[in-house]
Length: 220
Image 1 (tube, rainbow, N blue to C red):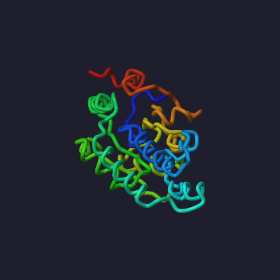
Image 2: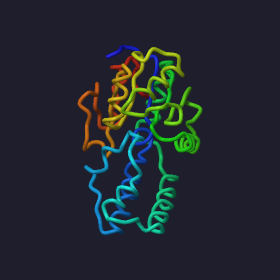
Image 3: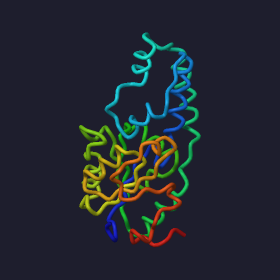
Image 4: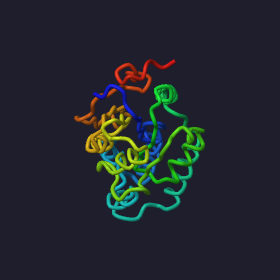
């Protein structure tokens, strides 16, 4: 473990905001409308990655035909309404405040597109707290490859080894470790079914973040 990190790099989906569970519920609802089911075990491997095929294609293969377009569009519209109400997860603000007090630069590194991440950061009023935001639009390869985290470190002008990453998924953790970074995993209700074996630390919530362990003092 590094004693005093130079930077804190955070994943977005499932780490800052739990967009993962509403998405799963939305997709599972569409599956059920077509007489199928979607187990968490069959969904979790998608999280933290951008190189999977669209879920509607998976459903089409499963049911042997194209899903009902109206059902899909209605579910996606309802999903957008839910996303607009989501708040930061517990402990996020306290962690950012502690990083500021410790003079740690902060960045977001997400496999989602910029339009998604930036719109939520703006909506939540925290966009200006990050010195850099790197998404799938900035790299050729997303998680589990290390490119996103290396791009974030380069944008912050820091040695990757001096960064602490906060992730929620196995793929994200693998990417952070491949980049040579320390990784703290805070699993969400879906990714807790697929915990990484290479995390430096796994905690239930950012409320439990060990500030002293990283030379950040305690949250106020």
